[in-house]
Length: 165
Image 1 (spheres, one colour):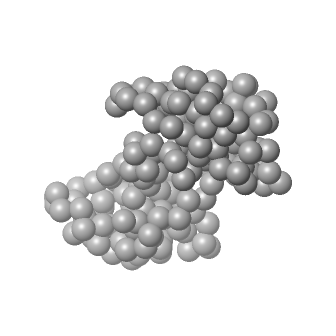
Image 2 (cartoon, helix red, strand yellow):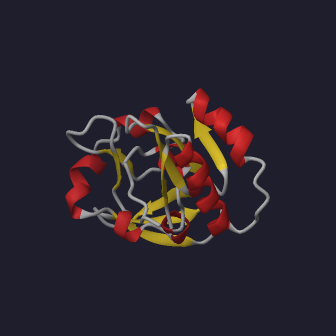
Image 3 (cartoon, rainbow, N blue to C red):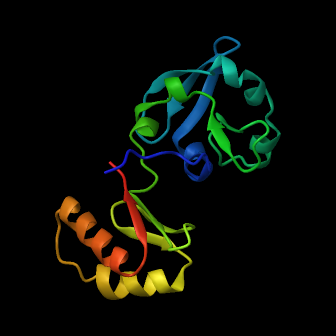
């Protein structure tokens, strides 16, 4: 399996971040006392030096109050986002995996991804049909066996699969 490589889309922190982390108090120019809303408890977040300028720009976050308060656009990279506290992020963020596998069409474009344990996210009608007819009926609970079988099924249909640890 391949190690997961983040594409910096920011969707994880846009969709769940504000529900997970709340800034309680500013401690220094870079340090914040934060509450983990779901699991409880507090942690100290430190904005990384290299992201201080980006962190100071709150315009996009102000327009999207559901976003994690530490998510910012990557300067100079339209549509890419960064975690400004990546090195001090809480365990709930460290353990999050946005997808278990990515599925690529024969032309190399990303055709879909498997989120969570086994949920397909795609707008590719051919991939969806293949998934529903051949993958959904698979009867194994063993994730390694399941991933191998999925890779074989989709490979025979012309797709390339990258599974992540």
